[in-house]
Image (cartoon, rainbow, N blue to C red; front, top):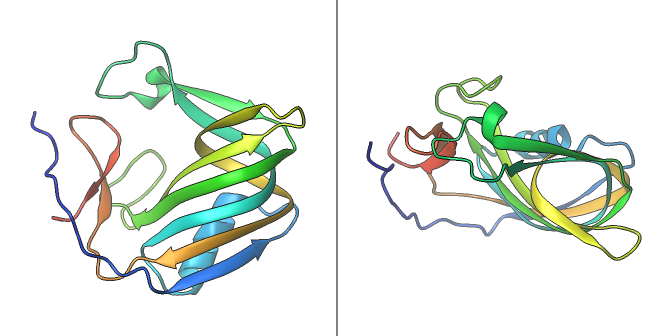
Length: 165
């Protein structure tokens, strides 16, 4: 199997919003709604701070192999919190095909963050869900002039950027 094609795109990130989420907001659906309400298909999470609880990460198990089989190769790490959100970044793009419970055209969120515990200890990684504890303030940019979508890679087994679909 050959890798998915490399590519680059010149994009325009000149339209940026700042949004504030409230206590109890489910972060991922609220991010999707914020982007959809603006009529955007693609966005990048530039930065964010605040506090979160009920955070779930996925992380590779030791010695996993490619292609990734999520149920076999990834640990789900659930953390109660609350945590101080030190940073968050990610992207939102439409899906091609199906992946798990997601259907063609659904927005795919890929989010990484760094959290601080009350002791000063840090935890970070690929976050798949969280709830806002007190507040979360996030800068989101519209990705203009892009054809990028996510599609399951035959090589990695994960959703990868493609702009040739």
